[in-house]
Image 1 (cartoon, rainbow, N blue to C red):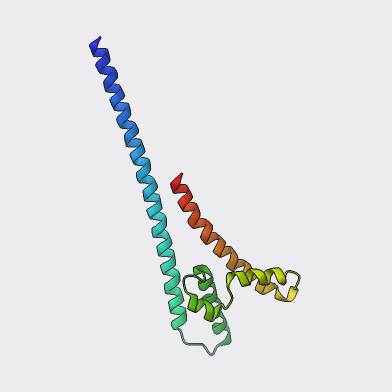
Image 2 (image 1 turned 180 degrees about the vertical axis):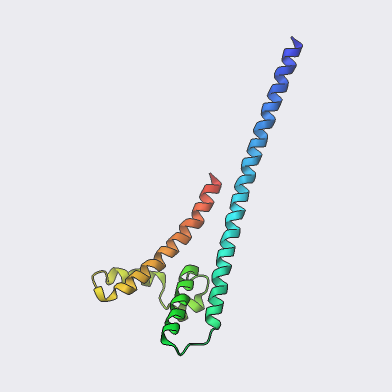
Length: 144
């Protein structure tokens, strides 16, 4: 009889230890995912910043096509980083706030001549939304 009780106690201890290991593993995995996401975000932002730095350090080109390409790349990099990260560069090269871009799109909704600008603003606004939602999504998944 005492052997059965001892076996039952031993089985209970083993199961308890297994659950403890499982919960520890889940907590570690969650922390690892959060750290990996933060590292990936950092690498992505550093890549964008280096590319923008190279773009800004290039002298203006006399070739109109090259000058336009550099300006488009500069705008795209600034759009990806957002106005909060580089406010001086944003003001110099983009000029309008996200609220102004949204307001322009609302005002010019039926203006076919402003379609290219509305499309550009739409991308800027979606990048901002994705950046905010992506960061919030990482936090929400880790808190679950």
